[in-house]
Image (cartoon, rainbow, N blue to C red; front, side, top):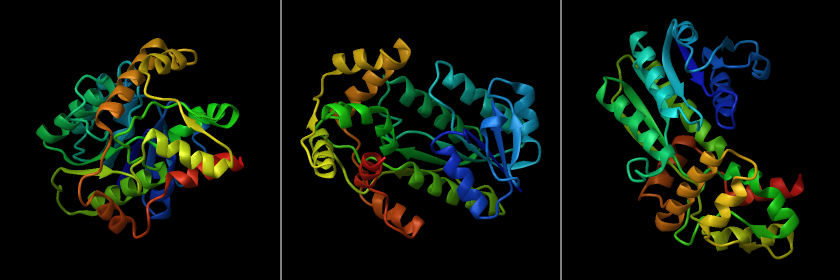
Length: 288
């Protein structure tokens, strides 16, 4: 009963594969570049991408359960729709889908709207699915570590409402648990949504204070200015991506990412351990 992991070479996907291998699952991955896969010999690697119909059909052969993580690209929604259609044609109805926290609310943010579109497809087309909705990834801080370490500024405009930032390792382990559960179930299980959050809800000022403590010197929060943030992102990524990140940041500032009652307790019960904290990542980055 093979589990196919799409998005297996990224920050979350690699951990998903590791967790599934630890649980003795029969794992296959689809990747554009098998040379970058570097997985244990037990993992079946299929070359292809989400717009390659022949590769998708080959990858879905004899698969029972799908983990779908499709990257933020200009054609992300097209990729999701095609992948789920081909999966359905192959008879795959068991899916764990990596969405985003508040996908049904941030209708003006492409990344969120795309995820909600795929969620609706899963909900209305006969799939049995777990919709995983992670908040802001703690692991994203690698992108801004140089600004923090060299200039003493935390530059992400995350606002004052607070984000319950989540660690990629926690995301991946919950995904693996859900994949195993759905894969082993004798019948198709109903659609279920799980909010993936971290142990602390942090504002921009809170995050700067953590860095100040970890580094032993002042780190200040750069503020909520979306213009400056977009301009800075555009220096090292496509303009459309920088603009989309601006829209996401505006949502962080206006709404935050606040857990619902019971979200944290549910995750701790599923994992059987505490959630990884922001401070852990800050300590690791500082030490490196």
